[in-house]
Image 1: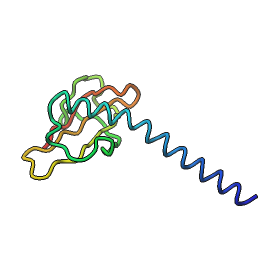
Image 2 (image 1 turned 90 degrees about the vertical axis):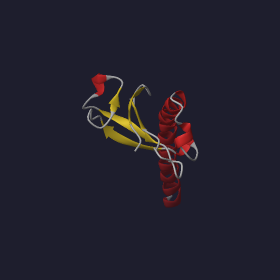
Image 3 (image 1 turned 180 degrees about the vertical axis):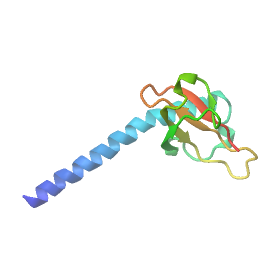
Image 4 (image 1 turned 135 degrees about the vertical axis):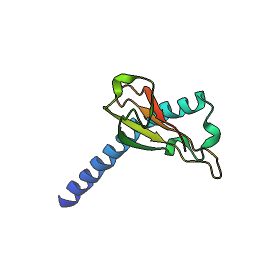
Length: 109
């Protein structure tokens, strides 16, 4: 009985992490499409599916905001790996977590 409960708990936890990854896949994809649209893909390295996704509170002084209604609100940031020896790194893309719409970006340094 104990083994069954542990097995079910393990499956439940694994299923949750997979579902979360799937949700972030669309966020990463929206960010990558924005990177390609702006021809910034030559600044990135690695696979776009491995981009880091994190919560971000939109700050007008740090980011280029495409939709001002998001200032002060929480969105997701998508950070792609930088190509070595690049003069300017890839920008961090800001995405609405409900609609997967790109709302802005933080310029690369």
